[in-house]
Length: 143
Image 1 (tube, rainbow, N blue to C red):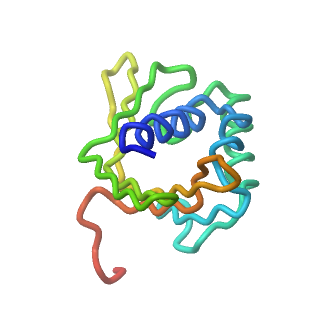
Image 2: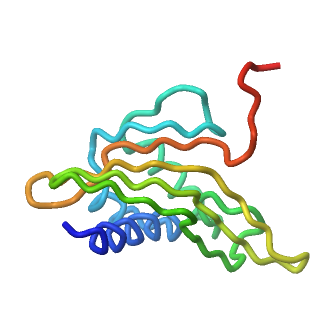
Image 3: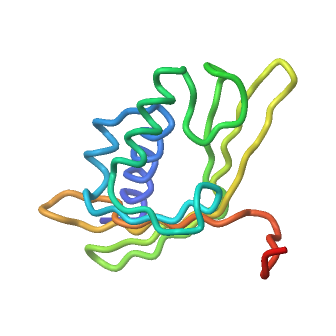
């Protein structure tokens, strides 16, 4: 897979999360997904049920996953400083995810750093691991 194909795959995967599109999310994500989402819990989360619940709940409320703002607010995402490491049937994408949300008070941008590991399984590319960290200087030792 070329870097351009990996980027196209990644954008489809991320758009499925933003759109609360569980079918496409399943098509682009491995069942044995592992992930770290620093703002949710300091522990690893395994499997798809965690995101399925969030996406189903957000869809019912007209919310975008990871966005700041009111329901049904226009939202977009951008990948800042995107870097692809391509190793044949495995690729690692690292970037700063910027989620911009428009509201009557103006545009708010939420950001965090992400790495996604993508592997080819059974002829299909799947995200198998995600690691997110703050895009701001967090303290090394908790207060």
